Image (cartoon, rainbow, N blue to C red):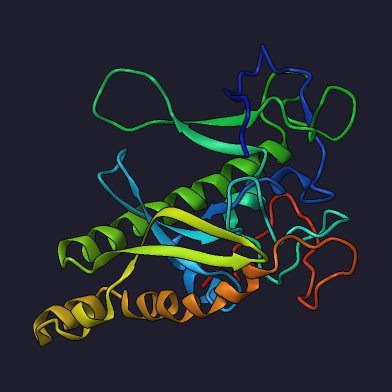
Length: 257
C-alpha cells in the first residue's frame, strides 16, 4: 500500500496537499490489511481474520485477509468502491501513517508520515497540510489525531496478541482454495487453536475474560467462516451483493468496537 513513506516536514513539504479518498484503487493489489483488536468484532462478519508473525514486536498481528494471493483484493469493485460495510482503520488513514522517529533517549517518539508516491498527494489540489507560517493545518491535525488513535489501539492489540502467545494458543493454518483448475495458497498464517483454548484452566480463562479478550477471540474464530467470500476472486463486471462503502479519509472509529 505504501510505496514512498516519508516523514512530514513543514519546510520540505510546505506546499503539499492531500485529496480526499475518492476510491480504493490504492489497495486493489493488497491481499492483507492489519486490524486492531478493537476492530475484530466488527470485522468478523466480513473478513477472514488470521494472525501473522511480526518479528518487529516478537509477537503476532491480526490481519484481514482480502485475497487468496498477493496482488489480489476481492473487496475492491471494478469502479474502485469498497465491497463491504466496514473498512479497516489503517486503510482509512491512508496516505498517512505513523513511524518511529530517530533520536536518542528512552521515550518512544513517532513522526507523522505520508506516502509521497500516492495519487492522493498533490501540489495543486486538496487540503493543505501546512499554513503560510509552517504550522499544521486542521487537515493535518485531524490526520495526526486519527493516527494517534490507531497507535493507541495498536498498543492494546500488541497486549492481546502477547496474551494469546503466552498461553500457546496460536497454531499454523494452511489457507488453500480451488479456483477453477488453480490451487491457491496463502502461507504464514496462524489461527487460535480451539482445543487449546477449551483446555485452559479456569484461572487462565478468567484472566482472558478479565482483560476483555474473549469477545475478540470468538470474533476471530467466527470470522473463519468468511473464507468463501474470497474463493471467486476479484469482481469483474457485475457488482457483488455486499454493501459498498464510500471512501473517506479520516473517518471516526466509533464503529470499530
